[in-house]
Length: 330
Image 1 (cartoon, one colour):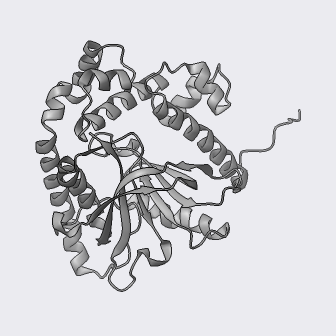
Image 2 (tube, rainbow, N blue to C red; image 1 turned 90 degrees about the vertical axis):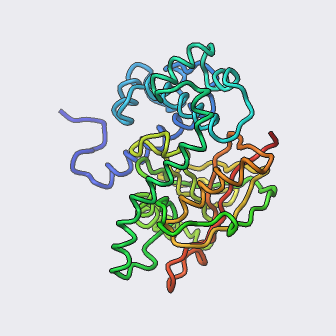
């Protein structure tokens, strides 16, 4: 018997193409869910977004993501709500619940307490203490790495996406923050799902950088977009996009996602230091600068932007980029 389907098993190049196509389709679904959390998410509609069979989509999604569609949507609604409650938003708990797709404050409170162990109000009130504890834990975990680094010359090994925290504090007064308007940017990106830090750095080195070079995009502005708060989302489920600016007529080759990084008002801080201290710089902005700024985050993603040619100093190992937080008035 012959088959009209192309060979798959044993054909490594075809396997890579097939997995890339699945990744593109699933990324469309994940992005669609994040931008429609306040609406009912019907399986049939999401299957159409991915261009997969409606009958089989729930199995495909669970197999790819490791959780059912319903569990994923519920988790994202709660995680986004937790992020909004802790980032200085002036919205009420009820408004946050409705914006994240819960039908009532009571249903939201029950689901939130089940996941996070406290009420939404207590979560918001405990944000400063929680951030302090998170920073202390990150510094303690990083100290062993810093000791190892002092014994071995590893300058220049860090890369974009290295969201560790150095044992050397990144002081608030070292960061000069500008509030400016940034233009919308058309981007091509590969998505990494998993821990930030070294795995994301390796993703840039092993996948994104070669892809940029092979497509003649060297020298263009690059961006690292972390979609999830690692203090809320488990490390194995965090999403990180390694992005490069592309021309308006760029269409990709079926192996990369193409999208838009939103423009608008951003708080922009210049970072320069060891890559392992980027995480602390982000926390400093969120914990110390943002609450006193008279501004709050909105729903656009935070990102790092950098020029690849000058981002990493090969002599010192220091990484330079701009940390960009989308903001609006309280």
